[in-house]
Length: 168
Image (cartoon, rainbow, N blue to C red; front, side, top):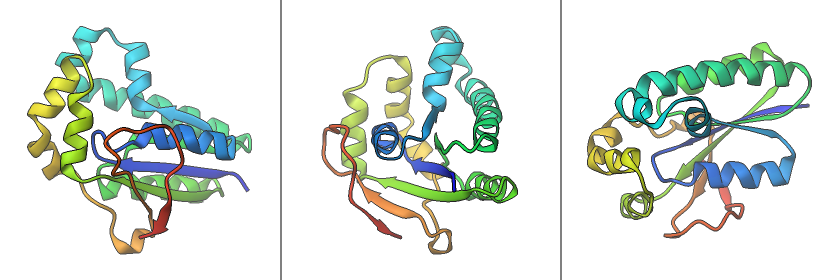
């Protein structure tokens, strides 16, 4: 049975690194909102209208994900899934499409997240550092009933390997 993997994590947690490792392990198709934005919007629009760009990316990638899942392909959604509502919607879509849904929560302590963000370049990276505390207030860790696979990513540098995970 094909699977919809939802990758949840805060800024700098290692979501994309984990998603790439998951591709190698499963052969699933990886859809990443940040990359879609970078490919489809000019940098000036990303820096002034990030939320609108990200929202458009999510909509486009969901359409692509649904088509792939209908064709019996497994899909990895590297969207962040910052709130419970977005994760519940993903689970509902998976159920409607009759596919398995696997929730991976990538966790790292704040000092590790900030260290990783400081190594990134560009205006968006700077804004992420400046707004770290405000953004953190918007982020909802998974609840126990979501049965997320909790993956600790506490190395200061990510090397692209699969993390050991435990069921949250």
